[in-house]
Image (cartoon, rainbow, N blue to C red):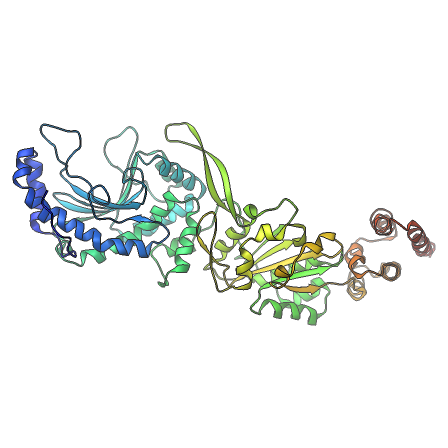
Length: 560
């Protein structure tokens, strides 16, 4: 075989396509042998040079994958000879090459390809029938995110230069793309045999014969890369979001599709774009807290550390205030999500983990795959990335979970908000967007507070909520003035009796708009008294003495 040194791509030749036409008419071993040098000079050598020039672009522009970029036969380039065939029609009448992932083959993986034909050049994305595992991934992603796939197609349809083809199981000819507005028709693609999205260049295109063809193909590959990600990765939206964050280019071809996306699988967040703005005055009126106290929380969150934990004894309104404050922070375009930690909560639920999935193959069988799935916080961050408004993530009872296990390497990002890390399962780059805030709540009466180490404390501001009688008084004046005297007397009695501030009884126990004497008595008998029994389990006489005083207050109010 004659060897030619690989040159930089200077363009194809008119003889490139003349050779393919003649091969179509004289497809024999004898003819090819007589014209072998033409094949190398006009087809093989220019295509190798083209792949040599495009290889660094593909590797650097799409670094999420390890690409096969070697411009050799059996690697990126195909064979012109049909293996195992003898007699006539020994050769393909087209010559092509493709970029795909390392340690796979062109047939077993999706491709970004270039194909030379007698009448045209085709550049595009292809998923063949032998790529069984990729088809299974495509099926799952299409079921999970059909609207995103639809939005990607719309972006290409608007360009009016792409051709969409798929082979159905019962057909041997290309089947045109269904109308992109027909979501159900798009889902049938998962049952097809092949899928191709291409730009066709006729032989009159002047850039075919110029070095500028390299830049043209680069732009086509950038258009089609989202489809490659969609069919090959378990979380294509996160992967493309990470690419947008990592690139120096502010707008990539698929950015509009991502910005227009509403995710359909959990975690799913209701849209808040139509909500009216929740003002600071409303926050002040509905929480009954001091203005200076609320302003201090806002100032803390607007500092470089956008994480705050509300601490205090039970009943001091920590979760309620966190929800109200989150509503204030989100404005009209942000979102709020709440999760409660518990002892069995883990990294897999919070950040990401491997989950078994049962999928149906195109042959109708069922198979089990193990996929990396995003956890609640990771998905929330990807939802927030690149969007307007503030996104507030509330972690209720944060100290009840194994925090080191749940947060993992997220502890680093909580301290260094401008950095990113590589996640261990997906190998994706991840960072916390600037518009994401974290509000945590911590019950100081819970013994697990001792498990909160200083590494975590350094990454959060801590705001103390106390059993403040003034808050209760303001609420009673507005909502239940007739019960102010007995409630405040009992509240004061409990406050003085419980010396440990971490175990005091908070004001929210009494905040029932329909509170009356009977309900106050029920509250004492079935909520407050059991709490005190546990608190003074080794000194029940203290509970008895306190109960006697409470009953006097209740009986006095009943007599009056």
